[in-house]
Amino acid sequence: MIARPRFWCQSALLVVAAASWGCAYAHPTAPRTTQAPGPKPSVLFAARQLHNPPALTGSGADAQRATLAFIDWAAFSTVDEREDGRRMIASARDNKDVAATLCAEAFKAQKRDHSRALVVLGILGEMRSPLGEECLSRFMRLPFPKEGREVDGEIIEQTALGTLQAKAIDGLAYLHNGTGDAEVLRAVAGHPSRIVRAEAISAYLWNYQNSAEARATLATVVRKGEEIFLDRVRREPGQGKEPFNRSLEAYLKAHPEVIAPAPERSQYAPKPRSPYTTPRATNNPPPPPPQ
Amino acid sequence: MNLRVFKRAITLGAVLLLATQTVPAFAHCAQTSASQADLDLWATHGCWQAFYDWHDPVYGLRSSDWTDRGWNDVCNTNLEYPKHWNAAYLLTYGLLDNNDQSFHGTVDYRATAEAAGGNYHDGLFHLVSDDNQFFGQFQPPDELFTDCPLYDDPVPNANPASRAGDFMHEGWHAWLLKYNWDNGSVGGHRPTQGNCTAKGCDYFYFHNISAYLFGDMWQNDGTANRFHSPNQVQVEFLCDVADQPQAWVPDSVRQAAQADANQRAAQRFINGPGYSCGSPRPW
Image 1 (cartoon, rainbow over the protein chains, first blue to last red):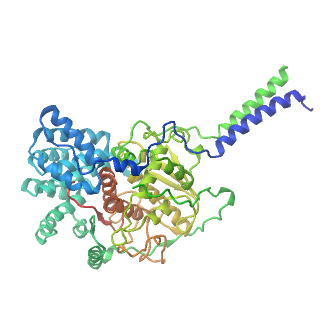
Image 2 (cartoon, each protein chain N blue to C red):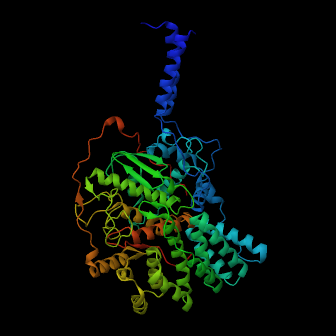
Image 3 (tube, each protein chain N blue to C red):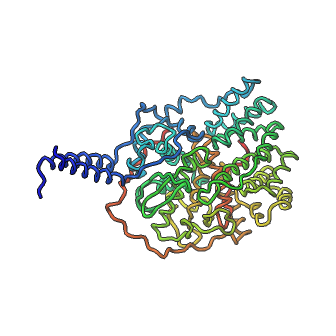
């Protein structure tokens, strides 16, 4: 039976509507925003007042405001502003209210914002003071989770706290005193996270300029099977290739067992690609560098 | 309209409705906040239109994959799409490319992450997934997924450095596919063994700085002397963000990169640990 023209008109309308929607869905449209575009990054950068950290001073509520402002500045600061920040932190090393605010913020950020917590713990460690030490030691006593959400083969709650406690260990090692060192060596021997144990070894060695004495001390507490961490190759900011390559060469000579076996070929050759599924990617160069 | 025509119209409508249901019904990542590192990096570019206009075709993004994730709200820092291009911004401009100090150059990292086919991989698409069991996935032949743990604060990887680091990791699975290498049967990695404590392990193919000219990271000689694994490429990228960044890269981004590089280097390598990055000085 042939349907009456009226039905075909109605059907055609529906098909056209669906096709239009389908086309809109399948064919990419440019990303959009309802906000007015901002100025170029170079303009934003030029407007910044560099080398001018907020003062880390005051008491009570003033100290609290100043400390929070300083954390925001520190998190956003450039590589070239590092020494400005360090000077300001050193000037506040005996300020109890500043230290208390930093400490409270570290515990708060631990639950809410991992990257902010890293910055705050770094500032506390850089204070190199008993006030910072007390807080970092308390942070190290946060119970390490035994279970949690597994992401890509790791328990994400363990990685989160492990990386933060590794940052706290950096501060304790930087104190370069008996109580701080004792905390670091305890972590080397007994912390449940390899992340923390590895950083404790690295930080201890760094703070003792990789001395033979420091290595001997670590050798008495390092876990069996983790001795290789004492020889681990480190690359530091600004380090040239010669010292790095020399230390890598020495490491591989001392530990030939870490040289990987030859890679293996897959038994399955990749299937030829259909030209119809080729991404519409371009090789366009990006806009000129922003700064 | 008589009853028969009405029924036909209803039937046709139902068929069309069913057909549209093949479009994925998206749940979403948290979409309620952005990390300090994301916000700090964002503040350096202020939602720069020239970049996000460039980014979407270069990363093989399709609007249909990113609907309701910020495709139509590209300056909303809480959403996945803006966070994706924030990471791409770091990757594109954030490295110093010091031939004497960097492991590899922007040219290597960009070619690994971006969609275009070439020496590093065949063409690919970037997609997003609500799967919470992974940071990212490469689904052969050409789909690179980034998942909610790279977008949802307070997961430690929800920052632009770790997100871009995952572009490296998944992009390197595409490299393995292109050149027909077998990196293991546990999701493209090897089972827990040796010095690796995670469930997906790689070998670290140690190499000197300047062993690879910028642009040569894709090369291999079929031996362990000149080869990379996905976790290694990721660690080397994160190290370069931490140690060899442009001066304007915010401290929060550099610190997140360093923390991720070091935890990964300590836990993910059978013949580990990999290199340690950055200074242990706290700030």
